[in-house]
Amino acid sequence: PDTALLGIGTERLEEEVRARFPAARVGRLDRDTARRRGGSEAVLRDLREGRIDVLVGTQMVAKGHDFPGVRLVGVVAADVGLSVPDFRAAERTFQLLTQVAGRAGRGSTPGRVVIQTFVPDHYAIRPVQEHDYERFYAEEIAQRAALGYPPCGRLAMAWVSALDAADAEDAAR
Image 1 (cartoon, rainbow, N blue to C red):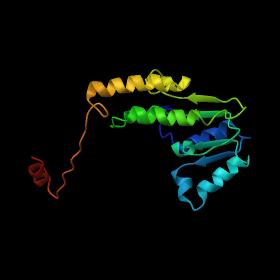
Image 2: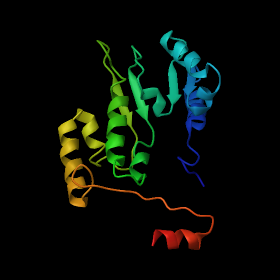
Image 3: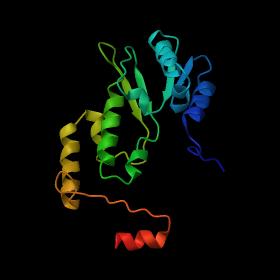
Image 4: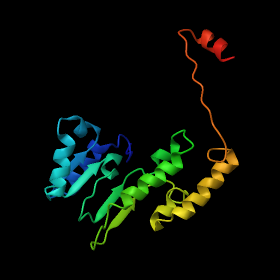
């Protein structure tokens, strides 16, 4: 069966980009390339110096880098972070998407951002389109208030561990 997102990762996406745009100079920035000595720096230098036309990467591409001349930014599976069991998942998704969206069209060069998602109307995704922080905040704070999550309430986590499960249960009780 054809499953479009089966095994989708940066390497797979890089292959797709190379197949669809054979003349493009494609680079990749992810955990694997960053692990290699000087790997991240080399990719970023190539991008800055115009030796890369398309950069495929993980969220680390969005963190603290300024790439003048970027006209198009695409995000695949933008909603994946929403399924993380963390009350801050929507906030983190909104922050990341807003940060990524800010990478396109800096200065006088107009840019475009394409976000692929299965939940385009989610309150953490829809406001990114208009950079509408207030709209996101209003929905997020209402959700947190309804559930008693910070800053509207407090949460605590206790870890109990033991070599034997019964001992851990007894200690937790």
